[in-house]
Length: 437
Picture 1 (cartoon, rainbow, N blue to C red):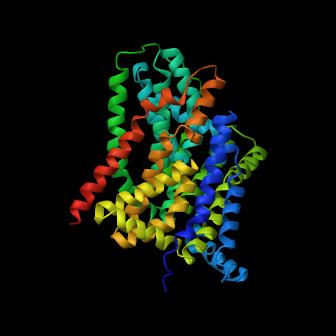
Picture 2: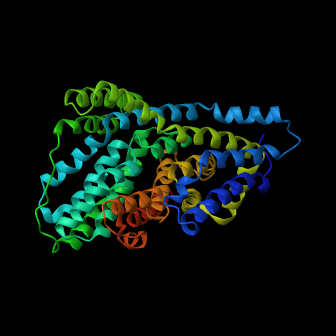
Picture 3: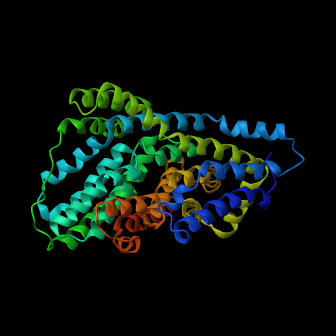
């Protein structure tokens, strides 16, 4: 039996948003703490929200609430998500920085200097799709973009924005991205199905972005760019992961292939020692621990909110405001976008919005692959442009470390890809809904 709509059951989400967003603004903009939003222990904030949920509905004993939370955490999709997160972390730990840099240097070495900014965008697209992390991609390629701007005379904000845009392209599409994993598992769809639906939205946005970058840089910068030495063999693990993912091979098999090939190649080329490789695997998995803990806590929290009628209340609101096939899809996009603006983390936004999005999809006849695609796409749109997101902050910090000066508000006007991705998503929604009716 469905629980009755109860808006008060949404209080834990409000508590989380107020604590996280409030402290983030305080740290970042009042106290001027670098990366202030990411100084907040998000696991602790979720624990506070979970405590608020446990204090609600006193008619249900605490043991009963534990049972509700356990059912939410024990879902097959949640366990699958956790295991994939850990495997993806190990893959990134094994391949490391040198493999990703090899991709960027290879692309820059085979193209004319005047196309360097467009190449930065393409390199970021490739690396983020292979690595499954936008922040990791920006960390690796943003320093290269600063060097390109300094040598060639291209606009530094445009160079950095191109890297951020490319990073969000891969974050949105990658088979091993935590956003893809979260979107597919919360909506119950195959990754290759979500990829195909997503690709139709992302490709037009990426191609138009490339054209805009070419037009803006065709008459600027002509110096030859000096490329450091790199090893082509380091590209192989990424290529294998991409091919396996597109071919529809099971994601665990794809990741194992990537981990094994990456281990063999990095050892054979002397990139790392056997001991360092073991440590890198551990640090890669450890890098996913916070994401895993957030997934577990959000699952428990959503279990209580659903049981107490919070989701029914939210659905009732969406039914009143958003009508028809188009309205349901836009409502889904706004839901995950609002979560992302509040949390500054697109994975957390998807995990939080996922269960509600699933109910919206059932209500409005949205297929799982389409709802997963919209969840991932709209979260990446907002995450790519918010000035306090990790992507923007990491890019700026990398530039500052190299002696360059640039602000988020200089970069934001040059973020062509996120804006075009939003436009492409809306076109997809309107055309898709029309075909269904």
